[in-house]
Length: 246
Image (cartoon, rainbow, N blue to C red; front, side, top):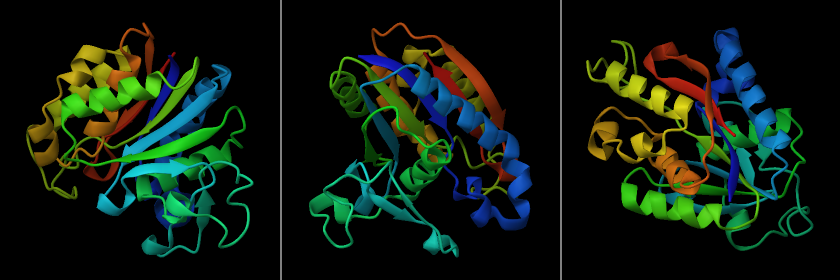
């Protein structure tokens, strides 16, 4: 059963080395993410599942210790998704999915977990595709929630990328309302509202978090968790939300 969840944005700019001179602009978001992960640890889960959006090559499961990198963003920085296990501690010894590089969203999660020295429970990652239908997201979430007596989720995903003229998706007047709906739902642990998010509108607004949030909704069904909104802003025209469920 799901006992806690943390929702964090996943821009590589959260990593100061990537943001470089602009790093201080996201200090508040980083601090909120650290607080959110602290809520996960305090819940004493048996297992942590990290869920984030992914392109085709990064979709599916990623084991504990899987490697990620920010080299694609011009930074010589590598990360691991939690402590390395005996199966993947050595160079070139990992097999199967362990050899796949983490998608950027899970690499950001790995960096966040590394900052907090996560050791509260075994963990795994799951990259989900943007086109995944809401019904399937909810089903996947239900399966995750049933994996252990005490499951925690770290859910990575950005809201719309269309909040300003300089945003990656340019200005879309629907974006602010969509993001407000998302923030209310995440802050209130409103499972029904997350399930009801319009996948087509989310796609048009480039809201990469839609599928992971609906996975969260499926995992939380029947768990009766309470939510708290820790951070909401739209730096660079992209909606970032940090929330906890416990």
